[in-house]
Image (cartoon, rainbow, N blue to C red; front, side, top):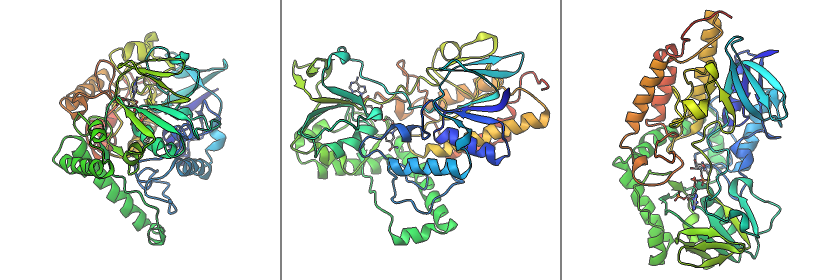
Length: 488
Ligand code: NAP
Protein backbone atom coordinates (compact mmCIF):
# COMPACT_ATOMS: atom_id res chain seq x y z
CA UNK A 1 0.00 0.00 0.00
CA UNK A 2 1.25 3.48 -0.82
CA UNK A 3 0.12 6.25 1.45
CA UNK A 4 -0.12 9.81 0.28
CA UNK A 5 2.10 11.29 2.98
CA UNK A 6 4.54 9.90 5.54
CA UNK A 7 5.72 12.19 8.31
CA UNK A 8 8.79 11.36 10.39
CA UNK A 9 8.62 12.75 13.91
CA UNK A 10 5.77 13.67 16.26
CA UNK A 11 7.17 16.85 17.76
CA UNK A 12 5.94 20.41 17.18
CA UNK A 13 6.58 20.22 13.41
CA UNK A 14 5.30 16.70 12.72
CA UNK A 15 2.12 17.28 14.69
CA UNK A 16 1.54 20.59 12.92
CA UNK A 17 1.84 18.84 9.55
CA UNK A 18 -0.49 16.05 10.64
CA UNK A 19 -3.10 18.41 12.05
CA UNK A 20 -3.09 20.61 8.98
CA UNK A 21 -3.34 17.57 6.68
CA UNK A 22 -6.28 16.25 8.68
CA UNK A 23 -7.95 19.66 8.59
CA UNK A 24 -7.43 19.77 4.81
CA UNK A 25 -9.30 16.49 4.52
CA UNK A 26 -6.27 14.32 3.75
CA UNK A 27 -6.76 10.92 5.36
CA UNK A 28 -3.94 8.91 3.80
CA UNK A 29 -1.00 9.73 6.06
CA UNK A 30 1.00 8.26 8.94
CA UNK A 31 3.30 9.85 11.47
CA UNK A 32 6.30 7.66 12.32
CA UNK A 33 7.71 8.32 15.77
CA UNK A 34 10.73 6.44 17.10
CA UNK A 35 9.83 7.03 20.76
CA UNK A 36 6.81 5.80 22.69
CA UNK A 37 5.39 9.26 23.17
CA UNK A 38 4.90 12.41 21.14
CA UNK A 39 6.39 15.82 21.92
CA UNK A 40 9.91 15.84 20.42
CA UNK A 41 12.25 18.06 22.42
CA UNK A 42 9.49 18.69 24.96
CA UNK A 43 9.31 14.95 25.62
CA UNK A 44 13.09 14.49 25.74
CA UNK A 45 14.15 17.51 27.79
CA UNK A 46 12.79 16.91 31.26
CA UNK A 47 15.72 18.34 33.21
CA UNK A 48 14.82 20.42 36.30
CA UNK A 49 13.61 23.84 35.20
CA UNK A 50 13.20 22.84 31.54
CA UNK A 51 11.07 25.38 29.76
CA UNK A 52 10.85 27.75 26.87
CA UNK A 53 12.34 31.21 26.78
CA UNK A 54 9.86 32.22 24.08
CA UNK A 55 6.48 33.40 25.45
CA UNK A 56 3.72 30.77 25.41
CA UNK A 57 1.34 32.85 23.28
CA UNK A 58 3.95 32.94 20.53
CA UNK A 59 5.39 29.47 21.10
CA UNK A 60 2.15 27.72 20.17
CA UNK A 61 0.16 27.04 17.03
CA UNK A 62 -1.81 29.99 15.62
CA UNK A 63 -4.73 27.61 15.04
CA UNK A 64 -4.69 26.24 18.59
CA UNK A 65 -4.50 29.21 20.97
CA UNK A 66 -4.89 28.64 24.71
CA UNK A 67 -6.54 30.92 27.15
CA UNK A 68 -5.14 29.15 30.19
CA UNK A 69 -1.37 29.40 29.85
CA UNK A 70 -0.14 29.58 33.42
CA UNK A 71 2.80 31.92 32.88
CA UNK A 72 4.57 34.11 30.35
CA UNK A 73 7.28 31.54 29.61
CA UNK A 74 5.89 27.99 29.69
CA UNK A 75 7.64 25.14 31.48
CA UNK A 76 8.19 21.76 29.82
CA UNK A 77 5.23 19.89 31.42
CA UNK A 78 2.80 22.57 30.23
CA UNK A 79 4.20 22.49 26.68
CA UNK A 80 4.12 18.71 26.53
CA UNK A 81 0.52 18.75 27.80
CA UNK A 82 -0.33 21.33 25.11
CA UNK A 83 1.06 19.09 22.35
CA UNK A 84 -0.86 16.09 23.71
CA UNK A 85 -4.05 18.13 23.77
CA UNK A 86 -3.49 19.39 20.23
CA UNK A 87 -2.92 15.82 19.00
CA UNK A 88 -6.09 14.61 20.74
CA UNK A 89 -8.25 17.59 19.79
CA UNK A 90 -7.49 16.90 16.13
CA UNK A 91 -7.66 13.10 16.31
CA UNK A 92 -4.00 12.68 15.39
CA UNK A 93 -2.96 10.10 18.00
CA UNK A 94 -4.32 7.08 16.06
CA UNK A 95 -2.29 8.28 13.05
CA UNK A 96 0.99 8.02 14.96
CA UNK A 97 2.99 4.81 14.77
CA UNK A 98 4.94 4.98 18.03
CA UNK A 99 8.15 3.02 18.61
CA UNK A 100 8.84 3.03 14.86
CA UNK A 101 12.19 4.44 13.83
CA UNK A 102 12.71 5.15 10.14
CA UNK A 103 16.32 4.27 9.33
CA UNK A 104 16.31 4.68 5.54
CA UNK A 105 14.27 6.51 2.90
CA UNK A 106 14.88 5.73 -0.77
CA UNK A 107 13.14 7.37 -3.70
CA UNK A 108 11.74 4.93 -6.24
CA UNK A 109 11.98 6.75 -9.57
CA UNK A 110 9.77 4.29 -11.38
CA UNK A 111 6.91 4.22 -8.92
CA UNK A 112 7.35 7.90 -7.92
CA UNK A 113 7.24 7.13 -4.24
CA UNK A 114 9.42 6.89 -1.18
CA UNK A 115 10.33 3.53 0.29
CA UNK A 116 10.81 3.75 4.04
CA UNK A 117 12.63 1.16 6.10
CA UNK A 118 12.07 0.86 9.83
CA UNK A 119 14.60 -0.22 12.45
CA UNK A 120 12.71 -3.49 12.89
CA UNK A 121 12.93 -4.31 9.18
CA UNK A 122 9.50 -3.26 7.93
CA UNK A 123 9.03 -1.50 4.60
CA UNK A 124 6.46 1.26 4.03
CA UNK A 125 5.66 3.41 1.00
CA UNK A 126 4.47 6.98 0.62
CA UNK A 127 4.18 9.40 -2.31
CA UNK A 128 5.39 12.33 -0.25
CA UNK A 129 7.84 12.26 2.63
CA UNK A 130 7.86 15.04 5.21
CA UNK A 131 10.69 14.95 7.74
CA UNK A 132 10.03 16.65 11.05
CA UNK A 133 12.93 15.38 13.13
CA UNK A 134 14.08 18.74 14.49
CA UNK A 135 17.54 20.21 14.70
CA UNK A 136 18.14 19.48 18.39
CA UNK A 137 17.21 15.85 18.79
CA UNK A 138 20.56 14.04 19.07
CA UNK A 139 22.64 14.79 22.18
CA UNK A 140 26.23 15.85 21.65
CA UNK A 141 28.75 14.62 24.18
CA UNK A 142 32.10 16.28 24.98
CA UNK A 143 34.89 15.18 22.67
CA UNK A 144 37.70 15.07 25.26
CA UNK A 145 39.43 11.72 25.72
CA UNK A 146 38.48 9.35 28.52
CA UNK A 147 34.72 9.93 28.50
CA UNK A 148 34.11 6.26 29.27
CA UNK A 149 36.73 6.20 32.05
CA UNK A 150 34.61 8.18 34.51
CA UNK A 151 33.22 5.75 37.08
CA UNK A 152 30.66 8.08 38.70
CA UNK A 153 27.17 8.77 37.36
CA UNK A 154 27.04 10.62 34.04
CA UNK A 155 24.19 11.72 31.82
CA UNK A 156 23.23 14.31 29.21
CA UNK A 157 20.80 17.12 30.05
CA UNK A 158 18.40 15.81 27.37
CA UNK A 159 18.49 12.32 28.95
CA UNK A 160 18.14 13.40 32.57
CA UNK A 161 18.53 10.56 35.06
CA UNK A 162 15.55 11.23 37.33
CA UNK A 163 16.32 8.07 39.29
CA UNK A 164 19.54 9.57 40.55
CA UNK A 165 19.44 11.87 43.58
CA UNK A 166 21.99 14.69 43.40
CA UNK A 167 21.41 15.79 47.00
CA UNK A 168 24.67 16.30 48.88
CA UNK A 169 26.82 15.28 45.91
CA UNK A 170 29.73 16.96 44.19
CA UNK A 171 28.37 17.53 40.71
CA UNK A 172 30.11 18.73 37.56
CA UNK A 173 28.27 20.43 34.70
CA UNK A 174 29.93 20.82 31.32
CA UNK A 175 28.41 23.57 29.24
CA UNK A 176 26.75 26.90 29.90
CA UNK A 177 24.17 27.09 27.10
CA UNK A 178 20.38 27.58 27.31
CA UNK A 179 19.83 24.10 28.83
CA UNK A 180 22.48 24.40 31.56
CA UNK A 181 21.25 27.89 32.37
CA UNK A 182 17.85 26.45 33.19
CA UNK A 183 18.90 23.45 35.31
CA UNK A 184 21.89 24.93 37.19
CA UNK A 185 19.69 27.21 39.37
CA UNK A 186 17.44 24.23 40.19
CA UNK A 187 20.17 21.82 41.28
CA UNK A 188 22.62 24.27 42.90
CA UNK A 189 20.73 24.57 46.22
CA UNK A 190 20.62 20.77 46.67
CA UNK A 191 24.13 19.61 45.80
CA UNK A 192 27.10 19.90 48.16
CA UNK A 193 29.38 21.38 45.51
CA UNK A 194 28.63 22.33 41.92
CA UNK A 195 31.54 22.67 39.50
CA UNK A 196 30.51 24.42 36.30
CA UNK A 197 32.98 23.94 33.45
CA UNK A 198 32.55 27.00 31.27
CA UNK A 199 34.22 27.16 27.85
CA UNK A 200 32.63 30.48 26.91
CA UNK A 201 30.90 33.15 28.95
CA UNK A 202 27.51 34.07 27.53
CA UNK A 203 25.34 37.15 27.33
CA UNK A 204 22.51 36.70 29.84
CA UNK A 205 19.50 39.00 29.62
CA UNK A 206 16.69 39.21 32.19
CA UNK A 207 13.69 36.97 31.60
CA UNK A 208 11.17 38.83 33.75
CA UNK A 209 9.01 35.74 33.87
CA UNK A 210 5.72 35.93 35.75
CA UNK A 211 2.58 33.92 36.40
CA UNK A 212 -0.54 35.08 34.64
CA UNK A 213 -3.05 36.49 37.11
CA UNK A 214 -6.85 36.91 36.89
CA UNK A 215 -6.58 40.04 34.72
CA UNK A 216 -4.45 38.25 32.12
CA UNK A 217 -6.67 35.18 32.27
CA UNK A 218 -9.73 37.34 31.66
CA UNK A 219 -7.96 39.04 28.75
CA UNK A 220 -7.05 35.69 27.21
CA UNK A 221 -10.65 34.49 27.15
CA UNK A 222 -11.14 36.84 24.20
CA UNK A 223 -9.61 36.20 20.79
CA UNK A 224 -8.63 39.88 20.65
CA UNK A 225 -6.71 39.61 23.92
CA UNK A 226 -4.84 36.51 22.81
CA UNK A 227 -4.05 37.98 19.42
CA UNK A 228 -2.86 41.22 20.97
CA UNK A 229 -0.42 39.29 23.14
CA UNK A 230 0.77 37.09 20.30
CA UNK A 231 1.07 39.99 17.90
CA UNK A 232 2.81 42.16 20.47
CA UNK A 233 5.42 39.52 21.25
CA UNK A 234 5.89 38.79 17.54
CA UNK A 235 6.46 42.45 16.74
CA UNK A 236 8.87 42.83 19.66
CA UNK A 237 10.84 39.72 18.66
CA UNK A 238 10.96 40.57 14.96
CA UNK A 239 12.06 44.16 15.50
CA UNK A 240 13.80 44.81 18.83
CA UNK A 241 15.30 41.34 19.38
CA UNK A 242 16.07 40.95 15.67
CA UNK A 243 17.99 44.20 15.66
CA UNK A 244 19.71 43.25 18.90
CA UNK A 245 21.04 39.91 17.69
CA UNK A 246 22.03 41.32 14.29
CA UNK A 247 24.36 43.92 15.71
CA UNK A 248 21.83 46.74 15.33
CA UNK A 249 21.58 49.77 17.57
CA UNK A 250 19.00 48.12 19.81
CA UNK A 251 21.67 45.56 20.62
CA UNK A 252 23.29 48.23 22.77
CA UNK A 253 20.15 48.42 24.91
CA UNK A 254 20.06 44.63 25.36
CA UNK A 255 23.78 44.63 26.04
CA UNK A 256 23.21 47.27 28.72
CA UNK A 257 20.53 45.08 30.34
CA UNK A 258 22.90 42.10 30.32
CA UNK A 259 25.78 44.08 31.83
CA UNK A 260 23.53 45.63 34.45
CA UNK A 261 22.17 42.22 35.43
CA UNK A 262 25.69 40.83 35.73
CA UNK A 263 26.73 43.82 37.88
CA UNK A 264 23.76 43.60 40.21
CA UNK A 265 23.62 39.82 40.54
CA UNK A 266 27.34 39.01 40.85
CA UNK A 267 29.23 40.97 43.51
CA UNK A 268 32.62 39.28 43.13
CA UNK A 269 34.67 41.13 40.45
CA UNK A 270 36.73 37.99 39.72
CA UNK A 271 33.62 35.96 38.98
CA UNK A 272 32.14 38.86 37.00
CA UNK A 273 35.24 38.91 34.80
CA UNK A 274 34.88 35.18 34.16
CA UNK A 275 31.24 35.67 33.20
CA UNK A 276 31.85 38.54 30.80
CA UNK A 277 31.54 37.40 27.16
CA UNK A 278 34.37 38.08 24.71
CA UNK A 279 32.19 38.00 21.59
CA UNK A 280 29.44 40.33 20.34
CA UNK A 281 25.90 39.92 21.55
CA UNK A 282 23.90 37.57 19.31
CA UNK A 283 26.89 35.61 17.99
CA UNK A 284 25.41 32.65 19.81
CA UNK A 285 21.99 32.38 21.41
CA UNK A 286 21.50 35.06 24.06
CA UNK A 287 20.62 33.40 27.36
CA UNK A 288 17.43 34.55 29.03
CA UNK A 289 17.37 34.01 32.77
CA UNK A 290 16.78 35.78 36.06
CA UNK A 291 18.27 33.10 38.31
CA UNK A 292 21.34 31.71 36.51
CA UNK A 293 23.89 34.35 37.59
CA UNK A 294 22.76 34.32 41.25
CA UNK A 295 23.16 30.52 41.20
CA UNK A 296 26.75 30.86 39.97
CA UNK A 297 27.43 33.35 42.75
CA UNK A 298 26.49 30.83 45.47
CA UNK A 299 29.18 29.70 47.91
CA UNK A 300 28.85 26.06 46.88
CA UNK A 301 29.26 26.80 43.16
CA UNK A 302 32.58 27.11 41.38
CA UNK A 303 32.96 28.34 37.79
CA UNK A 304 35.96 26.65 36.18
CA UNK A 305 37.27 28.25 33.01
CA UNK A 306 40.45 26.19 32.65
CA UNK A 307 40.32 24.09 29.49
CA UNK A 308 39.26 20.48 30.00
CA UNK A 309 41.97 18.09 28.81
CA UNK A 310 40.41 14.71 29.61
CA UNK A 311 38.11 12.72 31.82
CA UNK A 312 39.50 10.44 34.49
CA UNK A 313 37.93 7.70 36.55
CA UNK A 314 37.31 10.28 39.30
CA UNK A 315 36.24 13.32 37.33
CA UNK A 316 37.63 15.99 35.03
CA UNK A 317 41.25 16.96 34.43
CA UNK A 318 41.89 20.58 33.39
CA UNK A 319 44.87 22.11 31.59
CA UNK A 320 46.36 23.46 34.82
CA UNK A 321 46.83 19.85 35.97
CA UNK A 322 43.94 19.88 38.50
CA UNK A 323 41.80 16.78 38.75
CA UNK A 324 38.27 17.83 39.75
CA UNK A 325 36.73 14.89 41.59
CA UNK A 326 33.00 14.43 40.99
CA UNK A 327 30.20 12.10 42.04
CA UNK A 328 28.09 12.99 39.02
CA UNK A 329 28.85 14.60 35.68
CA UNK A 330 26.11 16.28 33.66
CA UNK A 331 26.72 17.01 30.00
CA UNK A 332 24.94 20.23 29.06
CA UNK A 333 26.82 20.10 25.79
CA UNK A 334 23.97 20.50 23.35
CA UNK A 335 23.11 18.62 20.18
CA UNK A 336 24.57 17.56 16.84
CA UNK A 337 22.52 20.29 15.21
CA UNK A 338 24.28 20.60 11.86
CA UNK A 339 23.83 16.90 11.02
CA UNK A 340 20.36 17.33 9.55
CA UNK A 341 18.25 14.17 9.29
CA UNK A 342 21.02 11.95 10.73
CA UNK A 343 21.08 9.03 11.12
CA UNK A 344 18.41 8.40 8.44
CA UNK A 345 19.96 7.26 5.14
CA UNK A 346 18.15 9.34 2.51
CA UNK A 347 18.69 8.38 -1.14
CA UNK A 348 17.25 10.35 -4.04
CA UNK A 349 17.30 10.10 -7.84
CA UNK A 350 20.11 8.02 -9.31
CA UNK A 351 21.07 6.65 -5.91
CA UNK A 352 22.37 10.06 -4.75
CA UNK A 353 22.83 10.23 -1.00
CA UNK A 354 21.47 13.33 0.69
CA UNK A 355 23.88 13.84 3.57
CA UNK A 356 26.99 12.24 2.15
CA UNK A 357 26.79 13.66 -1.39
CA UNK A 358 24.24 16.48 -1.85
CA UNK A 359 25.18 17.96 1.52
CA UNK A 360 28.88 17.10 1.53
CA UNK A 361 29.67 20.81 2.09
CA UNK A 362 26.90 21.35 4.62
CA UNK A 363 23.11 21.09 4.52
CA UNK A 364 21.13 23.40 2.26
CA UNK A 365 17.58 23.38 0.94
CA UNK A 366 15.30 25.69 -1.02
CA UNK A 367 13.33 27.61 1.63
CA UNK A 368 14.94 25.13 4.03
CA UNK A 369 12.56 22.49 2.68
CA UNK A 370 13.38 21.04 -0.74
CA UNK A 371 16.50 19.73 -2.48
CA UNK A 372 16.91 19.01 -6.22
CA UNK A 373 17.23 15.33 -6.95
CA UNK A 374 14.98 14.47 -3.99
CA UNK A 375 11.43 14.73 -5.36
CA UNK A 376 8.45 14.76 -3.04
CA UNK A 377 10.69 15.27 -0.02
CA UNK A 378 9.92 18.18 2.31
CA UNK A 379 11.97 19.07 5.34
CA UNK A 380 10.36 20.88 8.24
CA UNK A 381 12.69 23.00 10.42
CA UNK A 382 15.38 22.16 7.86
CA UNK A 383 18.59 24.02 6.98
CA UNK A 384 18.72 27.77 7.65
CA UNK A 385 15.28 28.01 9.22
CA UNK A 386 16.28 28.41 12.86
CA UNK A 387 15.72 31.74 14.59
CA UNK A 388 17.70 33.25 17.42
CA UNK A 389 15.12 35.93 18.17
CA UNK A 390 11.64 34.61 17.52
CA UNK A 391 9.42 31.54 17.79
CA UNK A 392 10.39 28.69 15.51
CA UNK A 393 6.75 27.55 15.57
CA UNK A 394 6.06 30.47 13.20
CA UNK A 395 8.59 29.06 10.76
CA UNK A 396 7.13 25.57 11.06
CA UNK A 397 3.61 26.82 10.33
CA UNK A 398 4.86 28.67 7.24
CA UNK A 399 6.57 25.48 6.05
CA UNK A 400 3.49 23.35 6.61
CA UNK A 401 1.42 25.85 4.64
CA UNK A 402 3.97 25.62 1.82
CA UNK A 403 3.88 21.81 1.79
CA UNK A 404 0.08 21.87 1.64
CA UNK A 405 0.25 24.28 -1.32
CA UNK A 406 2.63 21.95 -3.14
CA UNK A 407 0.35 18.97 -2.45
CA UNK A 408 -2.66 20.90 -3.73
CA UNK A 409 -0.75 21.97 -6.84
CA UNK A 410 0.26 18.37 -7.53
CA UNK A 411 -3.31 17.21 -7.19
CA UNK A 412 -4.70 20.06 -9.25
CA UNK A 413 -2.21 19.46 -12.08
CA UNK A 414 -2.39 15.67 -11.88
CA UNK A 415 1.32 15.40 -11.17
CA UNK A 416 2.94 12.64 -9.17
CA UNK A 417 6.15 14.54 -8.49
CA UNK A 418 7.13 17.87 -7.05
CA UNK A 419 10.74 18.92 -7.12
CA UNK A 420 12.62 22.17 -6.80
CA UNK A 421 14.55 23.10 -9.94
CA UNK A 422 18.36 23.21 -9.62
CA UNK A 423 18.27 26.84 -10.77
CA UNK A 424 15.83 27.97 -8.08
CA UNK A 425 17.72 25.99 -5.45
CA UNK A 426 21.07 27.47 -6.49
CA UNK A 427 19.76 31.06 -6.62
CA UNK A 428 18.21 30.65 -3.19
CA UNK A 429 21.36 29.04 -1.77
CA UNK A 430 23.48 31.93 -3.04
CA UNK A 431 21.04 34.45 -1.60
CA UNK A 432 21.14 32.82 1.85
CA UNK A 433 24.91 32.53 1.77
CA UNK A 434 25.29 36.21 0.83
CA UNK A 435 22.78 37.29 3.50
CA UNK A 436 24.67 35.31 6.12
CA UNK A 437 27.96 36.93 5.17
CA UNK A 438 29.12 39.44 7.72
CA UNK A 439 26.42 38.56 10.24
CA UNK A 440 27.21 38.51 13.94
CA UNK A 441 27.02 34.69 13.85
CA UNK A 442 30.39 34.69 12.11
CA UNK A 443 31.93 36.99 14.69
CA UNK A 444 34.36 34.60 16.29
CA UNK A 445 32.35 32.41 18.63
CA UNK A 446 31.54 28.70 18.66
CA UNK A 447 27.88 27.80 18.21
CA UNK A 448 25.63 25.03 16.99
CA UNK A 449 24.53 27.34 14.17
CA UNK A 450 27.55 26.34 12.07
CA UNK A 451 29.51 23.32 10.92
CA UNK A 452 33.10 22.50 11.84
CA UNK A 453 34.23 24.45 8.78
CA UNK A 454 32.29 27.53 9.87
CA UNK A 455 29.40 27.29 7.37
CA UNK A 456 26.18 28.54 8.94
CA UNK A 457 23.66 25.82 8.16
CA UNK A 458 21.06 26.45 10.83
CA UNK A 459 20.01 30.09 10.96
CA UNK A 460 17.62 32.04 8.81
CA UNK A 461 19.35 35.32 7.90
CA UNK A 462 16.31 37.62 7.88
CA UNK A 463 13.25 38.43 9.95
CA UNK A 464 10.66 35.70 10.52
CA UNK A 465 8.12 37.87 8.70
CA UNK A 466 10.23 37.73 5.54
CA UNK A 467 10.37 33.95 5.60
CA UNK A 468 6.64 33.74 6.07
CA UNK A 469 6.11 36.08 3.12
CA UNK A 470 8.56 34.19 0.94
CA UNK A 471 6.96 30.81 1.60
CA UNK A 472 3.57 32.29 0.80
CA UNK A 473 4.69 34.08 -2.35
CA UNK A 474 3.47 32.45 -5.58
CA UNK A 475 6.91 32.79 -7.21
CA UNK A 476 8.40 30.67 -4.48
CA UNK A 477 5.68 28.12 -4.94
CA UNK A 478 6.09 28.05 -8.70
CA UNK A 479 9.74 27.23 -8.38
CA UNK A 480 8.92 23.97 -6.64
CA UNK A 481 7.08 22.67 -9.69
CA UNK A 482 8.55 19.51 -11.17
CA UNK A 483 11.40 19.48 -13.66
CA UNK A 484 9.62 16.94 -15.80
CA UNK A 485 5.89 16.88 -15.15
CA UNK A 486 4.61 13.33 -15.02
CA UNK A 487 1.12 12.02 -14.67
CA UNK A 488 0.14 9.82 -11.75
P1 NAP B 1 24.28 24.58 23.35
O1 NAP B 1 23.61 25.87 23.18
O2 NAP B 1 24.88 23.95 22.16
O3 NAP B 1 25.35 24.75 24.49
C1 NAP B 1 26.28 23.75 24.75
C2 NAP B 1 27.22 24.22 25.83
O4 NAP B 1 28.19 23.20 26.03
C3 NAP B 1 28.00 25.47 25.44
O5 NAP B 1 28.21 26.23 26.59
C4 NAP B 1 29.32 24.90 24.90
O6 NAP B 1 30.41 25.77 25.03
C5 NAP B 1 29.49 23.73 25.83
N1 NAP B 1 30.30 22.67 25.26
C6 NAP B 1 30.01 21.88 24.21
N2 NAP B 1 30.98 21.00 24.01
C7 NAP B 1 31.92 21.24 24.95
C8 NAP B 1 33.17 20.67 25.25
N3 NAP B 1 33.67 19.67 24.52
N4 NAP B 1 33.87 21.17 26.30
C9 NAP B 1 33.37 22.19 27.01
N5 NAP B 1 32.20 22.77 26.79
C10 NAP B 1 31.48 22.30 25.75
O7 NAP B 1 23.28 23.46 23.95
P2 NAP B 1 21.99 23.64 24.88
O8 NAP B 1 22.27 24.47 26.05
O9 NAP B 1 21.46 22.28 25.11
O10 NAP B 1 21.00 24.44 23.97
C11 NAP B 1 20.82 24.05 22.63
C12 NAP B 1 19.69 24.79 22.03
O11 NAP B 1 18.48 24.23 22.49
C13 NAP B 1 19.57 26.24 22.37
O12 NAP B 1 20.40 27.10 21.67
C14 NAP B 1 18.13 26.50 22.08
O13 NAP B 1 17.90 26.75 20.74
C15 NAP B 1 17.51 25.21 22.51
N6 NAP B 1 17.01 25.40 23.85
C16 NAP B 1 16.00 26.29 23.96
C17 NAP B 1 15.51 26.54 25.19
C18 NAP B 1 14.42 27.53 25.28
O14 NAP B 1 14.17 28.02 26.36
N7 NAP B 1 13.76 27.89 24.18
C19 NAP B 1 16.01 25.92 26.33
C20 NAP B 1 17.03 25.01 26.18
C21 NAP B 1 17.53 24.76 24.92
P3 NAP B 1 30.66 26.91 23.91
O15 NAP B 1 29.62 27.95 24.17
O16 NAP B 1 32.03 27.35 24.17
O17 NAP B 1 30.51 26.23 22.58
